Image 1: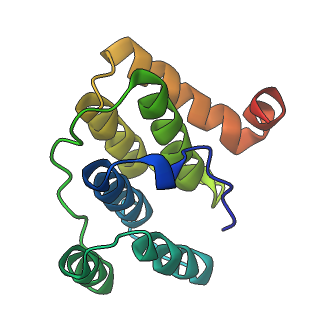
Image 2: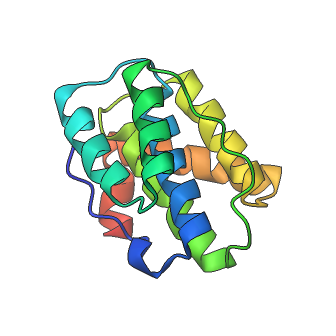
Amino acid sequence: MDIDFKTKISELNPRVRDWFVTALVAMILADGNIDRAEVDFLVKATSLVKEETSKDRLKKFIQFKTIPPLGAPGSVERKTAMTMIIDLIRVAVADKDFAATEKEMIRKIGQSLAFAPDEIDKLVMYGFELMSGEGQAAHA
């Protein structure tokens, strides 16, 4: 899994960055299957968290394959929120499978980022387009 993030993670404030990394962990754990590439990706993602307590907490969720609670991300600009959720969708479909649990996770994340239900539905459809390869050319 080699995701080139569009989200400028280094520009996020610490709370939003921790939330985003937690959302990445939740997204990877959502389908219950973690392959070797995802493990490598998770190691990289958790390295973005600066606070050791938060990092250790995320590692425990990964170790026990338990989806971490997300809570509210705090104040996130609309454009940044859209970029974040698109990155999360790209993570979800990287294995060429968009499981029902991953779609549900996108819905939860979309709600926490204040997207309307119809916007979330469009984002889920975008996930299917990405998985089939149609969305990559349009959004590259």
